[in-house]
Length: 480
Image 1 (cartoon, rainbow, N blue to C red):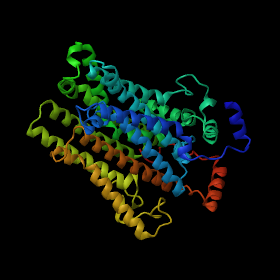
Image 2 (cartoon, helix red, strand yellow):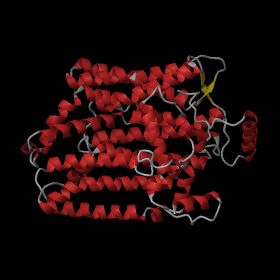
Image 3 (cartoon, rainbow, N blue to C red):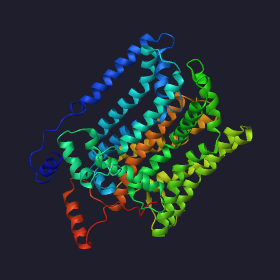
Image 4 (cartoon, rainbow, N blue to C red):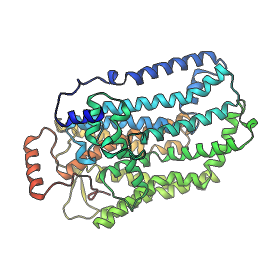
């Protein structure tokens, strides 16, 4: 059946009619509704704790609850990036290669993943209320680990190279046919999942692996998930200590106490600091790999920018290990340096908002009083006044979230539980906006035409024919 679908698609035969998101995701929506009903029944039966307490246990109360929620948020945000790029005429296949899933498919995958996470999280509550199971804390930890495993399995689920599926089973053409015929979400996303998994593995192997524009996007998203990686380490550490300890220390009454006592030793460990620093190491080595290949000095400065994260990670480790006024000031100073460097780089290099000066080095490279031309591709049909207002709001949005750490450092906002989840979701929102305008700047630098610009398309095809083909824009040679 799959071979016939791909054959029909390649011969241009009539495809099945397009479906709405509600129609294509009816199974995921039905399961989500059923889980909401189960949650309501459990909340009604459990009269000892409030509804807010129950929701917090499901989504944000402990470090083990937040990372899967953040992965779902990334998928929803990326669906927004793909949709905005489509509306602006930015063809993502030029930047990151073929196989980009449509926004509807990405949202469907996010909803399916949310169903899986909720199912794992609700299982201990249902078992306690219906079957009267003991050792509730142990079951909660096990459910969190199962949720992590499900997120990882969904990334490599067949058809995929991990399960030795043939490459044609998850190529872009095959997945496009699955989308047209509204097949299972795991089939529709096979190509994009395979690309993401390969990119993640290669990012971990930097600088011995290729560095493309897609590698840069994925690795930068990983830096926004640094705290989540620390949370995954804490979860693994707490679970290891919990399952190795006597069963009596993890019953329902003392689960919260056990988590807090065990969490402290896990958070202050060196492995937790390594987990926080890992995404920045990967991105640093990517910059050095591009520098070695191209010799462009901007990649060296980009590597220096990512290196500013390591003093901040180390200062935070010292502050958790032996908090004092000195370590507190050290964290503040390192955070100011790191946030300032990344904010300036966003404006000038990743988004290219200002007009360049020819022949200038890194210092004095831009004219801060003049915007580039054209001023915007995302808002190409809007007047200049709207563009100035939109990019002003964008800069303010990026600046405020880059420096949001200050609210936590000075104790004005809770950094535990819901407070930390809000900070992490805010950072992912900033990263989502960053990705859209980073793609826009890549388009601007490569001088690719927007979809619908027929004259520019013909010129691009002529140049490609004369040069023997375009490189597709995926090789990261202009930016580290």
